Image (cartoon, rainbow, N blue to C red; front, side, top):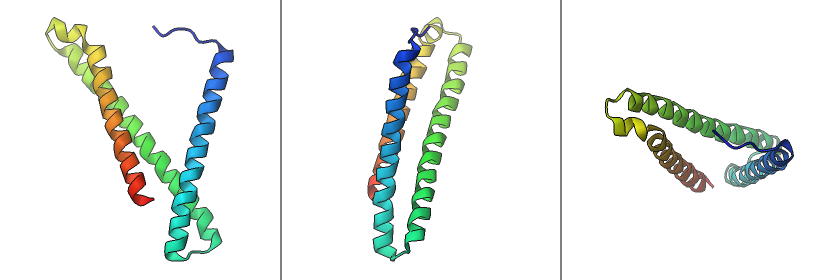
Length: 119
């Protein structure tokens, strides 16, 4: 069971997380749009559209990765609990969490590498 965190403690944490994500998305949008504008000599209206499309693409990639890891955890923990070994049953939750964390790390590194190549 997770520990109780009071509301007055949750609000600043979530607020700061949202601000950081918005700043990162804004920075990435500016960088990619400046590159595209310089490379293809696009108009200023296209600059705004490009930023919106790029932000939407990034959000979709992250949501797909999160959904994939969640589905992975559901399937693997189900398989571990169906196994007949007591050791597998006992360590199912920690094994699933650790392997999902490694998969999440790999996805983050891949998305970072793709983003760096584009920029």
